[in-house]
Length: 136
Image (tube, rainbow, N blue to C red; front, side, top):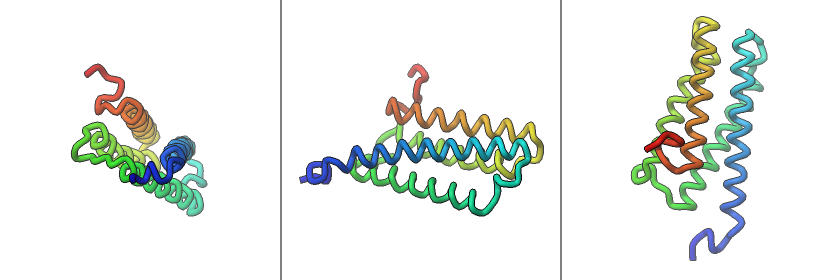
């Protein structure tokens, strides 16, 4: 008997948590990105940073739990591998958007690129196609 058969509530609960955490993570990132553009001090405060890390850690845990539950493997599923590569790109872009970029123009460009990257990840997750909404 599979885990889903033993606990049919588990998948919907994990999926709901994953989606909620995606929304929270992206909302906080966008707010921090705008704050960084406007040179607001709260963006890099310890509590805000810890909140972001906590949300992202829970998000990663929910994602890994879904992989395990559904027996997904990024080595055999191109859409999942694409999401993971884009996740790394998103983290790097976000780092530049929040603290590493030297000018406001560069911060804006990195913020927009990171948000576009996140939108592509969401589309890939929804379509389970490594090209997302692009014609393949």
